[in-house]
Amino acid sequence: DQQVKQNSPSLSVQEGRISILNCDYTNSMFDYFLWYKKYPAEGPTFLISISSIKDKNEDGRFTVFLNKSAKHLSLHIVPSQPGDSAVYFCAASPKDNFGNEKLTFGTGTRLTIIP
Amino acid sequence: DADVTQTPRNRITKTGKRIMLECSQTKGHDRMYWYRQDPGLGLRLIYYSFDVKDINKGEISDGYSVSRQAQAKFSLSLESAIPNQTALYFCATSPGLAASDTQYFGPGTRLTVL
Image (cartoon, rainbow over all chains, first blue to last red; front, top):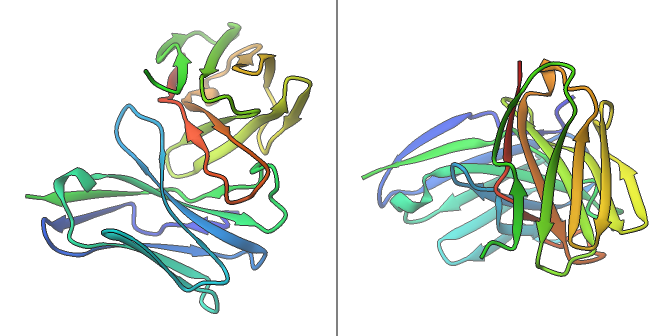
């Protein structure tokens, strides 16, 4: 039972354009959402997060949007750069995740930026 | 130098062998975690530890054991490896108590069980 779903295993975007990565979740107890980025032969690194009290969080070229009613979040990268080519994991956390042991990860989307 | 290191980076072993994956961190974090990544399944938690005296099972602990030798070291053992334990294994650390605390991942160990 995959509670966090990233339905697009891969995405290719032209350099300079917008990349939109999507994530859907089923558990209404999820309260906090994160995006991690992973390069080959490296571990995931934290990219950006959003609390359920917000519907948008922006950090430079990266913006995460949260639609609680649709149980959907998306990561926008504008403009896309070659260095953005990586696998992106969506992750969700319930409110009582005090030890960070209840983090649920999606399956990942491989983003390729075409020069 | 990397804050979270894992050894070995790659390992091929045979069914029935005992194998240990090691994780060390210099971040000074109390909380450490072991995950495995399988194609199409994302990262799943195997074990986690909040301090040296605290060990907890995660979502998929069967067939695994762990040891927290020190604040900085957290090892994962496969007592008798089987082919469906072939996966990419990640160690992670976290600084504190909040759900919003970022996890810091090691580079991963690619394990193949023949």
